[in-house]
Image (cartoon, rainbow, N blue to C red; front, side):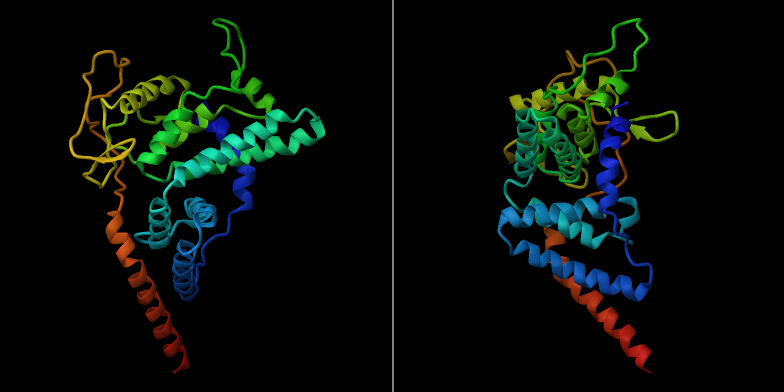
Length: 302
């Protein structure tokens, strides 16, 4: 199962970056004020510094133990700041490709080992961040990676007892197509070609057979015969940005069981905030949180 295999490589890196949010109300309020100030400071930096800084924040804040209360103002502020920077997705595309090139070029096993770990980390974090950035640029980067099958072991022969996942794990790496599938299914796209399926333990993830419907969907987008939009945003998009009219090809040739031209009846319930609104209220949120902290401190002095 694709999602479970990918998680093996991501686990160690994730643990290094878990920080946990304050549980005390006063400390939480102070953290929120400082966090929003830090977001504004990151925005002022050059893109080559702002993108990795904001991206790591987004990655951390999406971990279960770091989920904010209520409307998640810091997470939303970080995401909108990243989306406003040109080449936010291309940055991670470049890092992933460069890490692989560096790994493949090294023949010394003692040096190659750390490069494999570096490549795994770039894949785990890069694709996780891309899956949190609903934009035309992210769709393009992830869509192209869906066709990158390098490093993937051959399928198990029909009728032969074989553990393909074990063989893949033994190589130490996995293909970018596997990571891209997981990331693109996580984007809040309306009318996805396929949706995540349940595993035996009740969790949801991606299966190898989901790759082909997503590739077909992306090929239609790339050809200009299909547009897309994100939950909570009525704007239609192509790979180059907003478009005036929606485009949708006929269902002819679509894989059985897919809904490549029909809106899916059950989309995720989480709605994205309008981007313009979030950018406007970042400062207001900081001021409100600062005011709350001062009131609390004043009460303690009484």
